[in-house]
Amino acid sequence: MSQGKVEEKPDEFDADLKGHEETRDDRILAYDIKELHGRLSQLRDDQLRQIPILANGTPLHQGDTYIDLNDLSAGEFLAAGSREAEAGHYYVSKKELDYEFWNLLTGKADR
Image (cartoon, rainbow, N blue to C red; front, side, top):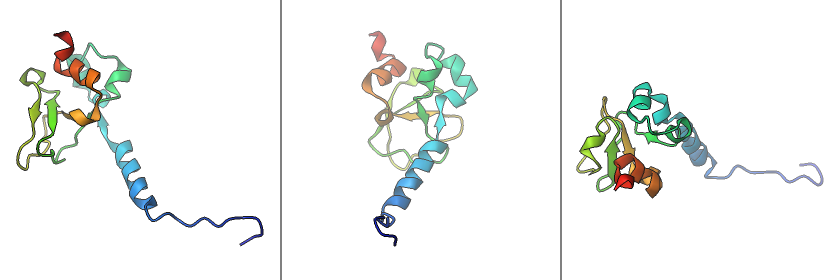
């Protein structure tokens, strides 16, 4: 160690945090799904980039609220049992959006 320099030790949580960041970078956004541009035509591109879609096989947390962008007319639902995101569905977790944006997606903002 040189005089005046502090040797940095890796934080024991660095690997966990970096892993989480990588997952966030790899997630699918509504913007990335072409068919959603038409279905959500009321939203701007920057808004579509704020909507994370659950990847196929991702477990839905029991008791959490979701919406399927592939079937907006079905409205929001509570996950039950050991349900997972399935192909052909574009699930969004309510926890990932602020309430105003959620209300816009679910049509509650229109009421």
